[in-house]
Image 1 (tube, rainbow, N blue to C red):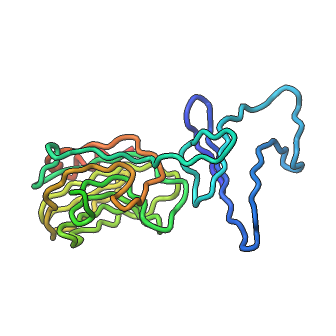
Image 2 (image 1 turned 180 degrees about the horizontal axis):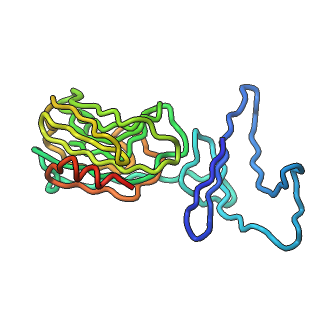
Image 3 (image 1 turned 90 degrees about the vertical axis):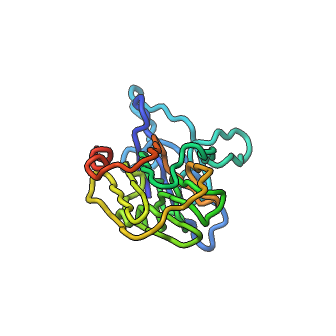
Length: 230
C-alpha cells in the first residue's frame, strides 16, 4: 500500500508499505524517479525533486521521522504522561481530541488519549481498534462502563472527537456526525495521569495528535457538534 500526505511548505510525506513473503530473507528500499514505463528515469535536465528524510523500518506502518545515519536507531516512543490530579473532575468532564489516524492498522488498539489512576482499572480513553473503529471508552473498578462505537476511520484520516461524560450520561461525536450515547454507567475516581499517544500497557496511537483539551464539566450536544465539524 502507498499514500502521500502534504505536511506543509510544499513538502509531501510519501510512504510505501509491503509485506515480506515467508521465504524472504531481506528487504531492499530504493528511492528514484520513474516515467511510468521505465524503472529508472534520467530526467529532462530541467525539472526535479528535493528528497529528504529517507526512512526504512520494520512495522505495520511508518512511524514518525527518525534521523538515522550509519546504523539502526531505536528511538523513544511518541508518547507523554503528565499529572492532572487538580484538573480532572470526578463528577463530570469533556474531552476534545483533534488529530490524524495512523497510516496503518496494528494488531491491537491504537490509544490516542487516556486519563487513568496509574492502572487500567480506572480510566477514560479514546482509541482506534484493530478494525479501524474509533471508540470512546470508560472503565471503572476494572469494569467497562461504556464503549461508544464512533464508526470506522481510514488510515491517515483527519479526526475531531468530543466526549462528554458524567454518571449515566456518556455522549460523543466524531467529525460532526451523529451523537453516540450510553445512559448507564459510573465515573472512575482517583484519576491522576493523562497519557498522550498510549495507555499504560504500551498500545500506541501511531498517528498525529494536533490538539487535545480537557473541560472539567460537561458540554451540551450542540456544542459537541460545533467542536467536531470541519
